[in-house]
Amino acid sequence: MPKRRPRAAKPGQAEPLPGDLQALFGQNLRIARVKQNKTQAELAEAAGLTPQYVSKIEDGKINVTLDTMKKLATVLHSNVSDMIREAEREAEQSSSPQSD
Image (cartoon, rainbow, N blue to C red; front, side, top):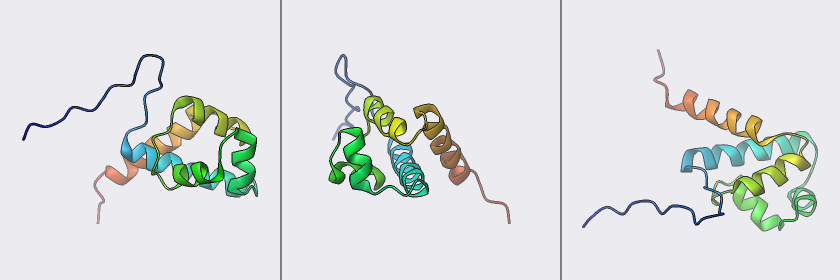
């Protein structure tokens, strides 16, 4: 059975994050939200999303577009590049060999 290539985003549609970054972004989102004492419902309302959608993002179950990441980062007084950079940093640390 031939391998399927990942589908490219449609023109004008943002490219989703790869799986690991998707999960790490969700974790970072949850950490930032909790630090600001916001509930998922409060974050969702302020970003124009549903609480269920925010929950799925935090659980790493949704491919997040840059537009959605920007909305969430803005509500949390952060920026997308910092949230992604932190996710990338965590991904690199978890993939690097552990020394005993």
